[in-house]
Image (cartoon, rainbow, N blue to C red; front, side, top):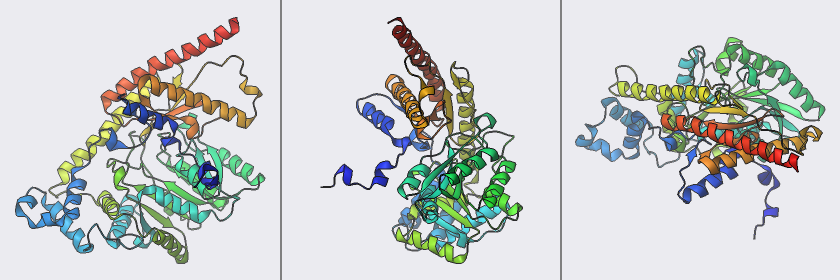
Length: 483
């Protein structure tokens, strides 16, 4: 029998807070009949976001081509959707039940390359594109290839999406955390990057790459073009590859900001010595098709023999799932003006993005009115990283603790807080310690994906809970003092 102690230690050490003990408890409460508001994960359609008609209608015809032979059915679809279904089936005659080429269907890879060229105004090739089961598999392929030695390290943001820390642990590498600047809209600081890499090198760690998430998860920040240029210069100077997680590129809610890709900046800088791994996914943006597990990895500035190794790596998994590949095709090749389906597509797309923008504003304004809470209002992605303050505990002196003890103490405090929030209100969020945070601070991550009324209710419940929780801590501390 396989026992706990016989499991690979790297598996035991890997942690993924987004679906940790608090989520497990939420599911138990839900089974007992409690209403749970799941703000712990970016899963739009589970929280009421409707799928786009274009994607689902086109997939229905491709999944069941028999429908194309029935005039009574075909007549209920927009003409361009019927034509597109026939085109896809002509390009991939075996249909959705068959494997594809390891790197993905060639016409979908070409569509991705065309999308990048349109978006950035830069040259690209389909040979640089590998279709993946969501962006996560692309990120893991890059990490696996980069980590050759146990002392190889990957620079990851703090706070970060724990896919990266967990995968680095699984692949036997070292994490090199760099703190994002909460006071400056979660931008990266060159001084902080330099200090982080110097500390790692002094500890015998060999840095090989830097991960950048833009727009940010869990922060909701959006990087400026100048900040990205600084990161590219830093990567070049330190001989690092860049993993650019750009899955939220459609999710920007400020008129003064826009998404700029690393590929575009590197092209403008004529940078050809830094290897770039760019990730995108159908799970986020305005599609929210998490369950279809579609995405792509684009690799720039590597020799052909290196590209071949990444395709070999993909071939070990055979290929990305076929329906996910087709969802990626629909993401990068949407209806165009003049198509019968275009007006509905634009209406549905804009409605999703407008709703997310409103909810981000409601959340930001509401939380910043709660005493003891502050939030850098999210201008991108689907999340807010809320900072909160708790009264000191009598008899506990955090200043006397070493770094590990202090981190463990703060992790227990934010975890206890989030668990109590769940038990009292049914709101499921993720402790900030699961993503990493500045020492001596407490945070939690919440999405703003639930319906607007639920977000407004969430802010009210948060205020009442936080006031009650902090009041109880103060009373407990006072009672201890009296004794």
